[in-house]
Amino acid sequence: MASLIQSILQQSLVTFRSDPASFSAQMTTLAGLVEKITAEDLNFDIAFASAPADSDPTIPVAPITYIHIFQDGVLSIGIFVLKADKTIPLHNHPDMYGLVKVLSGKVKIDSYSLNTTKTREITNQETTNVPEGVVPKNIFPAECNSSEVCDSLSKPCLLEPHNKNIHEIRSVDGAAAFLHVLAPPYAEAAAAAPEAAAKRCSFYAALRRLAPEVVLLQEIECPSW
Image 1 (cartoon, rainbow, N blue to C red):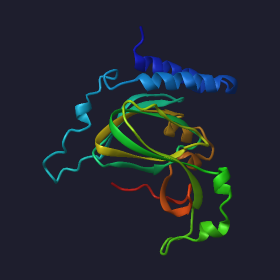
Image 2: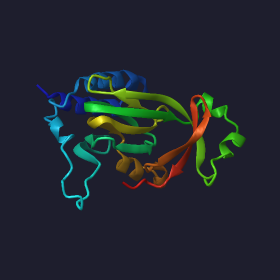
Image 3: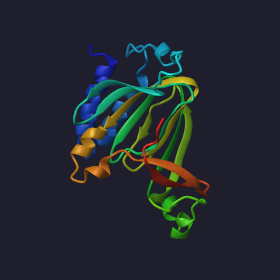
Image 4: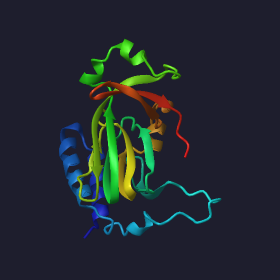
């Protein structure tokens, strides 16, 4: 009998190779499998996530660790481990689908969408009114879809090309780890596109709130740790 992670891999390949008519049903099946996965299923020692940093302050410690499980031209699967109070900055997933399932600890996920009914209600004048000292370049409104704290009992969080495609993930009350399924993977998405630069991961800063559920974002350089 296949292990649960093998079943997730097999279903992921079926899902992301499926035709539009069957995609939704296949994604529902995949999400159901991902919801069941635990740290034990992956032989992941949750103590690794909360292991203390090296006592030598001169040795830099990565705030985030990625554990590779699988990648091909269709998808990638891996585990992200966040030290306490660390953040994967606000970033996008161009033309991608993704599933996030917490394995240990808790994470806060803030998700945004572009080009929605609510963002289209924002005028150009509102988007050019930026905080003092900010250059009005590469800025646009984004709808705040959700801000939720998830743990190992939570359902997987799904991101889609046009829904919740931009998000920030922060560990809450200690370290955390989550399984991450992404299709297509970043490297393959960039290589497959003639306009490769348009497929790279972009990072953003939230400048100000434009409406109760709309914020002004600006594309920025990759943040340094």
